[in-house]
Length: 197
Figure 1: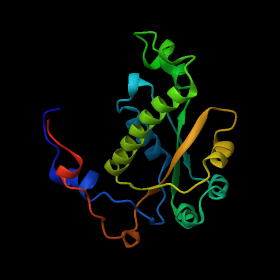
Figure 2 (figure 1 turned 180 degrees about the horizontal axis):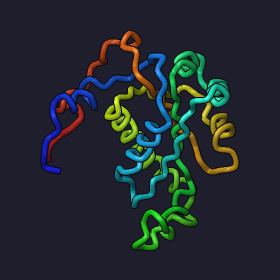
Figure 3 (figure 1 turned 90 degrees about the vertical axis):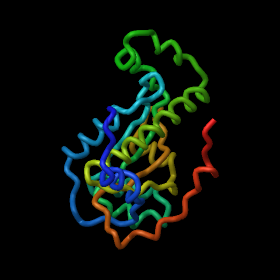
């Protein structure tokens, strides 16, 4: 792990990585999505809880269900994206800990906790997983367009019925159409958001 990544790789993952509003009419294979999900699962989460739950929406029927829950400004780009990823977090994530954290009774650390505590832990780690998904997608040659602006309860009812999974983000995914990009917005300088202590 001591070797540095080449500059062109860092460009692809970060410097040239953008949030796309439009995508080319080029399908994303199921095999690519499975590789993306596998890579996403390898990043660290709190006690290896892996609370993120992802639905890769591709079929016309599933897209129509999703579109009814999207804000008007997000409907067209969601409809034309090859894939839309519903990102949720599972409040019952701790039920998998005997498998994902087998060397200790980690389930007991969370079982019986108030939902507020479970939500804090689940959302924190699921948010990390979305970061891994974004970076992994770019590494696989894909582009992303994360979005707020949707009815989370409606998405939960349509895609996560009878569960304790809560939607927190929708990400359009595919091969980006550069004509859909806006100029990159300014970033804060190091001194404005970081310090070395």
